[in-house]
Length: 265
Image 1 (cartoon, rainbow, N blue to C red):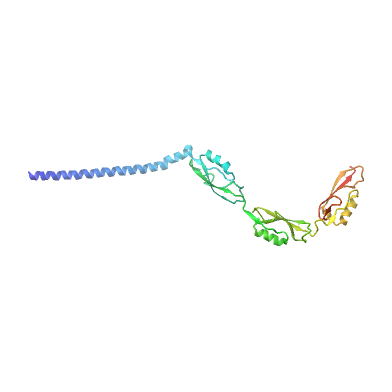
Image 2 (cartoon, rainbow, N blue to C red):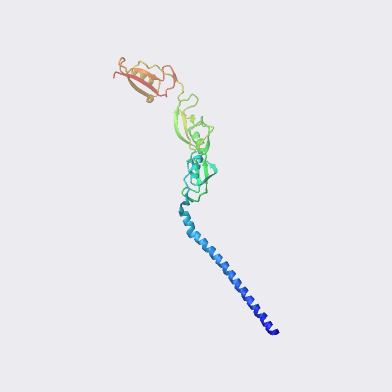
């Protein structure tokens, strides 16, 4: 009796091990099936569902907000379910002060709802310090202005009681102030004539030739004399009936002189 019982125990043990092996195989199969399902889900999401989602009308094209103020850009962003974040401010020669000079993501980028657009606002052109160059030679003045990062855009002659010919007698804008780096500087150069070196002669009632001879005798710049004609039948033709500067006023011989002469028609 002992032998059959022993054999019976051995048979039951083999069946038990066989059952455990099958159970493990089933468990591994479930795990592999789960992992395969996850991989298939990811592939389907990436190749089918997400493209369909993007084509379903939920995609948003980032608007162009450059050159707009925050007040102008905010409602545009909100209407597209986007928001704005001001990152910083910087000097910019091309964009007006307080307008958006840069945005990220850039205009035209495809975005999802709720995305933030980061912007940099313009502080306008970078200010530069313009030096005082009055009393300097033309070359020294131009060099100082160039060294300051600015440019001389024009030079004009000017009568001066203080400076000799060829010296800077004035400038625009005035020196010792901050100006935008795009500012052009005008220099006024002393022409050697005094600002008030003559009293304007009375030319009224003189004939035009006599008036011109008088101005020439006073050494006025004859290229700056302009003549207008006005109908005055009670006077002889070419009689001076008005003038500027006024008779007796202090002036200089480099100013513009305007004469009005009579005509019979």
